[in-house]
Image 1 (cartoon, rainbow, N blue to C red):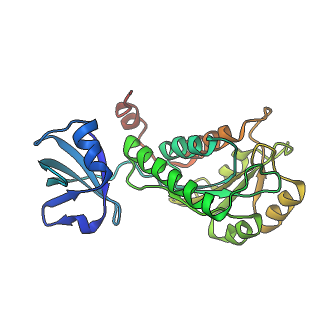
Image 2 (image 1 turned 90 degrees about the horizontal axis):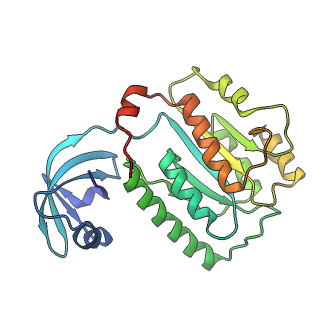
Amino acid sequence: MRKFFVNSNQIKEDKIKIINEDVNHIKNVLRLKPNCKIKICDIDNNINYICNIEELKEEIICKIIEKAENETESNVKIDIFQGLPKSDKMEFIIQKGTELGVSEFTPVSFKRSIVKLDEKDEKKKIERWQKIAVTASKQSGRDIIPKINKVENVKNICNLVPNYDIVILTYELEENNHIKNELMQLKNLKNNYKIAVIIGPEGGIEEDEINTLKNAGAKVVTLGKRILRTETVALQIASIIMYELEETNLGESFNSTKRD
């Protein structure tokens, strides 16, 4: 069932109004008709509804049939602090990270970052990245749209460390502390986890930046014997964290798996 997002002010009694770009998508791309069922999520309070399409005009009017269970969000909140990568790699990271359950993405400017964004370029990039997060959220059935934050620096990230249960810093020169060691210390201590992951750009992270983040409380880890591309790290580490800490019914998860 196709999924769309609305704000609370688009819901009145048993009717939901769909506006803007979703109108064209429903009418001209998906070619849905009256009486087709869709799922709509109120992103202001994360309530899902099963709805019937009633009218397809300049706006689309849907009638609420029933509330639906919120089933896709995790007890693990993962925020990715991603060193600014080259080309369209950030788009890939946001798209796939959203599918894997990441909650927020923050681009980071490190000393070795090749990409440098001025204020105008940053605004355009964030708008573009946010649209990618919206599309990926719809496709994967998320109940939230991950937030894309403004570009940060190492100093500001250090100030955020106390906000998390753990801040994991991936570093190719670390040899002894594996990510599983850190996750096992968290496991079963609580029901919900808030985790930050810091990932360097293509050129890696300078040693003095590693030490600054480590002194602020970040846990430096290795992901194994092989050096991964920056766009691979976010996906691998998000998968590992969800596998180790997410509460899920494995049978239901397998039964609900869909193929494109």
